[in-house]
Image (cartoon, rainbow over all chains, first blue to last red; front, side, top):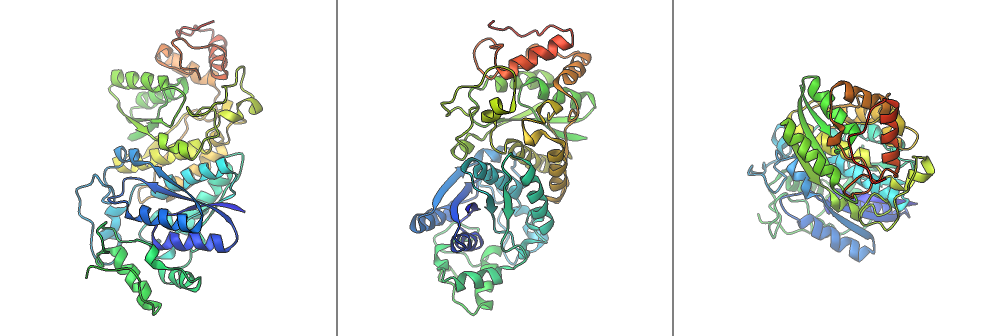
Amino acid sequence: MKVVVIYSGGMDSFTVLHRAIKTGHEVLAVSFNYGQRHNKELDYARRVCAEAGVVHDVVDITAMQSLMSNSSLMANSAEDIPEGHYAAENMKSTVVPNRNMILISLAIGYAVNEGASEVWYGAHSGDHTIYPDCRPEFVEAMQAVSLLANFEPVKVVAPYLYDDKIVILRDGLDMGLDYGQTWTCYNGREKACGKCGSCVERLEAFTLNNAQDPLEYEA
Amino acid sequence: MKVVVIYSGGMDSFTVLHRAIKTGHEVLAVSFNYGQRHNKELDYARRVCAEAGVVHDVVDITAMQSLMSNSSLMANSAEDIPEGHYAAENMKSTVVPNRNMILISLAIGYAVNEGASEVWYGAHSGDHTIYPDCRPEFVEAMQAVSLLANFEPVKVVAPYLYDDKIVILRDGLDMGLDYGQTWTCYNGREKACGKCGSCVERLEAFTLNNAQDPLEYEA
């Protein structure tokens, strides 16, 4: 089956990508440049796809920024990125309004264009309380609308919807994946900061899997 | 109430825009440049908003083209635009995959960013058989997902969902609107062609309202 995978270059979508390949699907990967503060994740994504021989499109939707200037993930924002463990209040400012609906909608359009029948993305249970557009209700509602929106029904699949980052990492390690090929840090410096919410959660997932993160850290 | 109106510059969304203004809403208009063959509609949209004192954003999402190369509405397509009255087979090639879900998703993000509670768009009954993403089921499903996707629920409103173009035009004429300020022709020449599906339907709507289209035509 032909499937489109929304692939940011981070560890969750990296695992989703390889889960789709491992399942035997013909995979088309799509990444979005939506005005993140840095493009390091996208560089990682490009390398991984090139090595895996996966068709990869990077779509520049930075023009979206003119509509959504209030998020600290956007490059034109002056706000500092919050440090420490994720928490709703802390991370609310990193929410790009309606991000997943926008990215999934674009991926569905791509799927229709390419004759792919599914769009996969990396929603997981760790994000349920922080991001409304990572919750099961949202995924189900996107499913429903996606089956209606075009002549060709496209299924929205979140293979790790009920798993947390620890389980996702375990699945990836079981597949023999090299997480040195992923970038999750919110900062775009040479080494990962080890302090932002994303680094803290990543390191915690490795610890809980009794594994060593191959990535280099500043601290 | 603050509402976002998806405004292409064509006659349907022009009427939607003025219906929202007339209802007493604070209106934010948004147009999308998604790689249409010509930008004439957008020029009309800019002028109308400037005259009406409506905040207007034109968002360039032409990068989307790299994902969706199979539609004849796109500037990079070699296919000819079909002539004559709309018919499913005839017009299928003018469908941009998943267009309305994409545009509405972006408009919802904009609404969240601006604290607007509704997104209005011009779906109408004349398009129900041709475009799946203009049907009531689609609008209801978008409603459902839009109320779930963000901390701030946004309502999707299609005020003319059960009306055809003739009724929309009647409502606009009753509001005293000047349809010389709208462009609907698929071709971007100086005068409207009078032959494409869009022109044929427009002229028919004027005839059935016993009104004269103020626009100039080639034929």
